[in-house]
Length: 122
Length: 323
Image 1: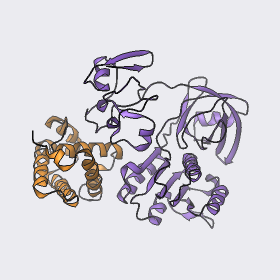
Image 2: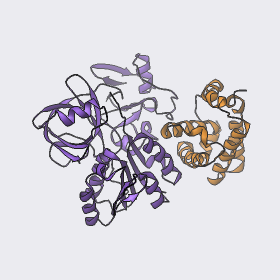
Image 3: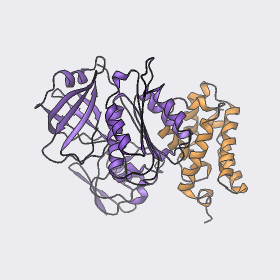
Image 4: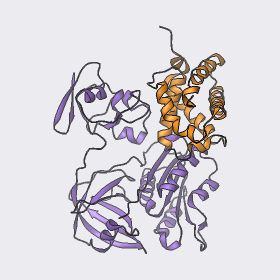
């Protein structure tokens, strides 16, 4: 069996490294950081790890419905396409910073992109 | 096949099963969610034996040393006794040997035990009154000092428990004390690492314990303690901390006052803002935050943005229960 993207990128340690860089970018971005104002940091980091694991095609048990439910409250407070684009931007920049090869970044971006409609409740 | 024991009950972990699989099959009430080791919902503890390394991946070092592990990631390698996180506490009786004022609204309470009381500086316990009323308090001393525990207890407005400790408890009284809890404590590793300690009010209690522990272990990196309150009357142990700073060149003590009046020798402003302005780069620092929940939660985010890694941020937000 060929290696999954998750394994090729470096597994759990790579996910942990990516999450720290990614979450700093997200929290520093005035366009989207209001959505994280009331979030508990430890829980958020765990969620971001799950998100990255999914983006890398690793083991995860998130369904489209989970993504819908988890973001429904945020959609009510204005979560839209532009916010989703900003997060995609930070995902790409994080992986570039970690010297992940461009073809793997494209794979990860495609997986994350596939959640767009569920996240935005469409 | 290995045996898992919870309290008096034993369960058999079948080959290929995780601890979580076994407990769910046996209808044990345990919270869980992702089953992939990311959400940490199913964290439990193995007090007697070290859990398999893979079941501790991603946990803070202070949790690892206490044998916490993720049930969903644990394929047992031997029989295990398991403590669920919400399992009821074991209480033991101690005797109050000191009860005196530290400042206008905070007392120092010292409780002695017949046998050694194992804990790590910075952890907290629950105190329980005869009627069952229970409150959590941080331990302020370090384990090496005889069989005693020290607490700094602030009188809260309308706080029934703190009023009881302030007004009714006196030397010679006995009181029920739970096992120590919490993972906000010092580990003697990376001794050259910078340590940032930020606390409000009686948040000084766990921080003082952590500080004493770090100094006793010969921590060589810079240690900065920022202790804040509104008025100078609500700070305490100021002279003692200043004395420590004179004795240890790597220890810096900065008392902060957010009120209007600040005598010489005190920084003016909110303790977290002062700490952040004086230490603009926290990359590779270890951070301890104790006290008011708003300060702690805000500061967690801010020190992370200043470069501290999440695994190096330890926080103990005080729950303030009125009535």
